[in-house]
Each structure stands twice: as structure tokens, then as C-alpha cells.
Amino acid sequence: MFIDEFEKHLTKFSTSPFIFVGSGISRRYINAETWYLLLEKMAHELGLTKPFEYYVSNSNNDLPKVASLMAEEFNSVWWTSPKYEASRANYSRLAKKSDSPLKFEICKYLEGKEKNINAELSSELNLLKKINIDGIITTNWDVLLESLFPEFTRYIGQEELIFSEIYSIGELYKIHGCVSNPESLTLTDEDYSEFHDRNSYLAAKLLTIFVEHPIIFMGYSLDDVNVQEILKSIIKCLTKDNIEKLKDRLIFCQWKEGVETQITDSTLLISDTVIPIKLVTLSNYTDVYTVLANNKKRLPIKVLRQMKDMVYEFVKTSDPSSKVYVSDNLDDLENRENVEFVYGVGLKDRFSEVGITGIDTRDLYRDIILDNKWDASKISKLLLPNLTTKYYPPFKYLREANFLNGDGNIDPESDVKEFTPKFIEKINSIELANFEPAAAYSSKKAEINEKYSSFEELQSSCEFFHILMYTPLLAPNKINLDSLKTFLKANLDKLLESKYGTHYRKMICLYDYLKHKVANK
Image (cartoon, rainbow, N blue to C red; front, side, top):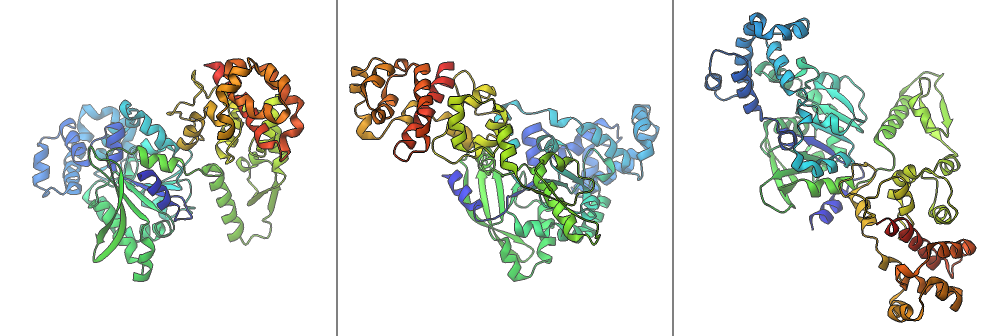
């Protein structure tokens, strides 16, 4: 099965993936044009005197040269035509080169494209929002990725990337520019010439990412010129021995209509170097996103990035006034003008007060019976998805936080980022049979229901151990929840007893299930 195989492959690496995103992703989700079709559309709408085919034939179908020819002609049109009076009012002071007007109009056209979401792919996009990755590299100009990953720090163009401190976590590298800065676009022949002249600097900046992280290419073909050029520059920085470090780290997603998702070994020829790659063939991205969404991080991207930033500053500084700040308040990460490094201690007690990850499962069992006033939303988001124990009571918190639908399930398309597909599947798969005892006892289910008409009758007739074993076998309509809660509360001291503990905890889970899931159907 692809999901199991892909998960196993990613566990080879100690770091989370980067995704390298091309135009195919924007075409898929916001119906953005290919570069060729975008230039063709611009040629028709900008009032150029020659047909688009003229620019194509006079540039030998070289799209950067096509853009250069169009920009040269459009420059005079833009500066003189009444049609662009409003554009001139907004952009004329920003025009630096003769190709600036064409870039302005392309950016105006692309602005807001991220709102044109393909409704048929909404569930796939909800999964994409949840993926846990360390960063994104893209040649796309639109802002779809920013809208999906608002917590990521964005770097536009080579200039920003080359001259910034990067931490390889929670970052978005728009190496060909962005519509938010028209002059940053890599569009014309001149732009590409400048880009290639500085490619070695960019490659050096990206080198650590490529040798330390798995890189998943999406929305590109294997022979995409942009990808080929980046890989050529990176390979130039590596010895033959170090090129081996790229093995299995390069994962290419290739779309093919009607196929089941599968992963195979393949190779990529870059210059004279053959690089082993993993090739994922797919007709949709659901399985890929599911694996990446299940790759749960222990801390949010924003906090991890700030921690890495502070550690970096603390290590590199020579200022003797630098200090380590010890705090148990994570909010200080937002307000740290004079702090180079933050180290948190004493968090468990504080977290227990507000209901975050300092609580353990024993606290949850007690709370189901004692009804402490904890923050159900925080418990649901920050604690439940990280529990690994087989039995725990989730439904009280999910119900109080309004995360359950009328059937007592989490919506599989929930946009709560903390709810991974694996967690949602786990919660939605819980059923009454989960709480039944071993088969030797379960075989008595019909007998138990024939013998006892209610939980109260069973309780008055059986010893403590058999109450624990037989109650889950009763039909739900025979279990009075108030009586069950009273029984559980009176025996709360059994929670940690080795003889009864497991069965008693399952009874608490059964109560939570009947009270907060089934009772609300």
C-alpha cells in the first residue's frame, strides 16, 4: 500500500521534508494558466499590435525571449495609452526598467487568484493545509502557498534569500519572485540571464536543505528546465561521494490521469550525473498529503522557528551582555526584544492548570468522572492528537469544543490543523465493541443481556471484577449513565490498581462514549 510504503521511506530521515512546488499545483487548485498561456492571454488583453504567434516565432519559442519582445513593445503602450492611466497612477513611481509595465499588469491579473479555489478539490486542499513540513521552495508567482501556510516566513527572489539568515524551518522561498513585488518577477530573457548568473549563490544557500531534508517535487515535470538548473548548480557544489547523500532524498510526484498512487525507484540525469530518485505516480495528491499530515510535529512551526532563531543568535553573538532567559511562559516568545535564548522549566504544572499537554491520561480519566473545568478546545487540539495509549476518553472534550458532528464523529474534512488524518480516523473508528472484554467473556454477551435487565441489576448481583467485565456487554439502553457514573466515582481508587486498572479505565471510556458520543446521535 502506498501510504505505508511512503511513510516508511520518510522515516529514514531525521528531518521533515521540504516541498518544491511548480506551476502544476497552481493550475490544479486555482486554475492558473501555464506560463505559455499566461503570456498568450496578456498579448491578447494588453493591446499589442502584433499577434502572440509573432513573438513566439521571433523568439524560436523561447518563452523568456517572448516575454522580452512583448515587454519591449508594451512599454510605450503602457506609458501613453489612456487604458493604463489608473495603472500609471499606482505604479509609475515603481517602474525601474522597460519590462516593468508588463510585470505590473501580470501581477494585477494574478492578484486574488488564490481565491479561485477549485471546489471539487476542497478536501484535497484541506489536507494540504495540514501537512507538516519544514519549508517550501517554489517558482510560482501567485500567493496560494502563503494563503495555505500563513505562519511561514516568506523570502522573495534570490536577493532576499541570499542575504538573509535562513533556518530551514517554517520558510517559503519564492525564488522567481512574487506578485506582491512586481519587480521581483523572473520573467524576461534578461531576468533569466541574471538569475543564472547568480544561481551558484542560490545553490550554496539551498545546499544544506537538499542534503539534510527529503525534497518532494510537486507540479513539475521531470525535465522541467527550472528544476534541472537548480539541481545542476547544487551538484556542482558536491563531490561525487557527497552526491550519494542525495540518494532517496529527491522525490518527484508525476501526475497521470486514472492511476493509483504508487512509488517506484527511478533515476534523473543531471549533466553527466545519474541521481537515484523516488518517483511517485498519482492522479490526485490525497495519499501524499495524508502521509505528510500524519507527520505530526511536537511544537508549532512558529515556536520551533523562534526557538531556532534564538539559539542561533545566542551561539553566534560575541556580546557579553547576552543572557539566557529562563521562563515557564511560552507567550514570552512573542515579546523577547532582549532575549537571545529561552529555556522553559516548570511547564507541567502550568499546563495542567489550563489543560494543555502537561496533563496525562490518568488526569483525563479522573476528569471524566469529576468534571473539572478544563479548556476543552485546548485539550482536544494539543493533548488528544498526541496520546499514544490505546484507551483514553476523548469524546467529552471533542463534544464540548464542538468538534463532533451529529453522528459523534469528527468531519473527515475538518480544517483543524492539529487533527491529522490518522487521528480523525482513530476517533471515528471507535465503537462499542472496543470496550468489550476478552473473547472468553464476550461470548457470554447474549447470556448477560438475557439475565440482567439493567446495569443496576447487574451491579447488585455481581462482584466488582465481574461488574467491570460484564457492563460493556450490556445493550446501551440498559445502562443508566447516572448510575454508571456514581459507580465509577465511588471506585476511583481502583484507577491505578494493577488488578483492576485496565478494565476500570475501559469502563470510564465506555461511559465517555455513551455519554458524549452515542447520547448525542
